[in-house]
Amino acid sequence: HELESVYFIEPLVQTLQRLYADGHIFMNEDGTRWNWQGVSAFSLAYDIHTGQESKVIAFLDWCAAHDVTIVRVFTAVVNMFNLDPETGRVAAERVIQLAQDRGLYVELVGLADTAQRLFDHRDHIDRLGALAARYNSPIIEIANEPKHETQALEVKNPAYLRSLAALIPSEVLVSPG
Image (tube, rainbow, N blue to C red):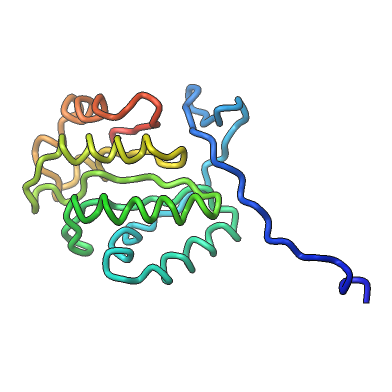
């Protein structure tokens, strides 16, 4: 058989380039256009925290095989599942590592359900920014649905969201929500 003499080598995942926005277009550092093919996978950090890494790996493998380019992950939430900000940040780093290994970007969502849990938003967003700056693949969304009834009053204020976005290092792509 011809195939018996061919060695199958696992393809190497390219190092992900940091993204930036050029108007309404996402670009790689090398100036090539990046295509956003995203999926919300809110529980990935929670799944890591609860010992379900194999579930996360299987999902990320599926994403990579189906041309998904970015997964959206909550880092602090109350209503869907209970994930406090510190735990969420720690688990999110593992999600970033697993996603990068598969050529995937991660959108870290900082604030969700803030009316149900009091915590220091500035500290959480500042630390998410520092985490994202250590890798090329994360981008940050400050708040999920900022005007939703589950958000604290200050999160509904665009000026407040801009002040939080200012905490993110300049090399990290950020959206208020």
